Length: 201
Image (cartoon, rainbow, N blue to C red; front, side, top):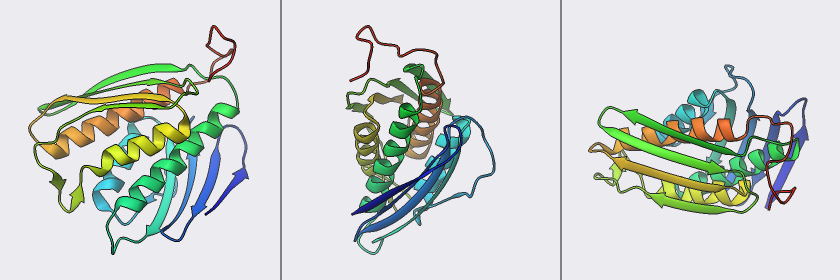
């Protein structure tokens, strides 16, 4: 496995990750929303969710991924979570952040809630049961794999829940909109490290 980063101005992060299963590159600017280079993983509904995540979080995310989609989407989805988590870990290394954030987002009949603590201690609490197990050809069980990978590499406590819903598309999309809102707010710049210990982790 090969992973590389590029030093950029401000809090912009550029990373690549290449394994025998996937080849992924991303650029993330947490402080401005622009056109970027788009999001393309070869997995249409996953691209849709990542676009909702970045747009509603007010971030610019450019992401390109290729992988063994002839097997299934698992490796692309999980490895994208790993690299995105690494990106937010690097953003934290650039200076103190607000640490805590919370968002509740509806989409039609669905309502999702995400809470974030940029604690330095990875943890995922995930409570979502989809009434339809797939959206198109996308296996919704992969969303937990993505969130596990993301929270682990970002080293955050992440609580993600869809309180209710009837349409799996609406539920997943509201969850990723809430994720974008909460993550962006938690990584807002702060003057000091918000910990009684004086450091995170």
